[in-house]
Length: 465
Image 1 (cartoon, rainbow, N blue to C red):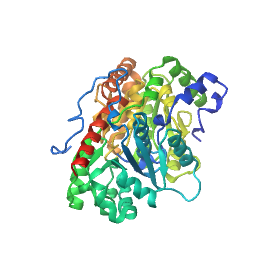
Image 2 (spheres, one colour):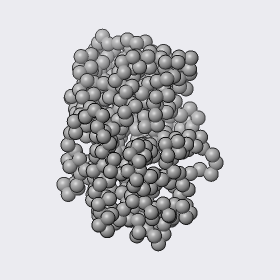
Image 3 (cartoon, helix red, strand yellow):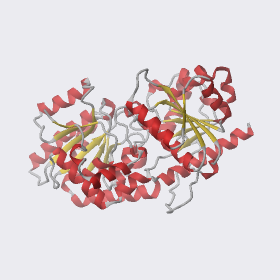
Image 4 (cartoon, rainbow, N blue to C red):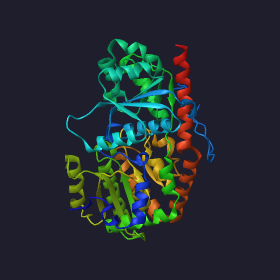
């Protein structure tokens, strides 16, 4: 069998320094692997919040751009509460608003009947920070929506909550509702979900590509018009940046993760960090990795021993797709080169341990792909598909290399793997340039400024209504 690691943390519990590092990683650095697949990721008429995404220089110790939200009542409505990208982003917004003194209320629409450890943990993190958590149904939810200065609806599928719960009161809420959309797949374009979209104060979307897709698809398929639409690129949390910029922390994490995987410090490590699913392209990545080994062997190139790591595995689920991945590894006899790591709460240890990130999402790609900017913060070059939000993050040939999505991208990705494996200086230079790009436009401060511009607009519209 290919090597599997249940978690890098097991041998680390005795290391007090490393334990302190892990405690430092807050919920804002959590990354969703097992549900993110549901969040697959501009029209010239679309108004963009960065107003065509201007580069915002970083200013240290700058007051929060969201401070105008002090004492404002904000209701956040999430389709679910999990370690997936959408809910975690909404939680980050909740915490940013709480820091400036806003009253924040949280509703989760879909919750399992039995107790769930993840939901329990995340709800208590919110309660600890002063976020009030309500049931999605009943008088409390309706009152919170009616009294709120702002309602943020997270993801397209959350739209059904409006009619199911608010019913005849829907019209009293739409003028102050901001719809934060992350989905990039066609099956989300249903009137049941988004029929109220034209009437809300605005839509906030993570990339220009996704905004353009929603504008075109809603008009063509549903014959409805998008509201004023804002593109808000995401940013890395302060906690993740602290680890990324701490050379001692990175060295400790790198050593321990590699030791747990049986990988030497001098070996070259390519990783894909995403939920294991066909849409994330782990199967095509493994094919490319195998082809790269063949190219190196055929050309007798001198490179360090190469390894591939798939972070986001689920040993308990044992899906058909994951079985296919493992069988491929066995068939190609590369068990000693491929490592499967169970789904995890934090990405920082793995970003510290690897040399290159592979972002291989297929079809339309990622809506944004936050793992990409997180990797760039760790000065890692990115090999990504030329699709979706990745094209708005990775500068091809400068901070990484892009390849086509689909089977046609297998050989180009294999060649890009060989390219970075055989050119150490190029790999390091791309990583440094990626870090510079993060500092220029993908920090928490930048994201907060972009979101603040949106919230000001929405509040202004709400008052005028």
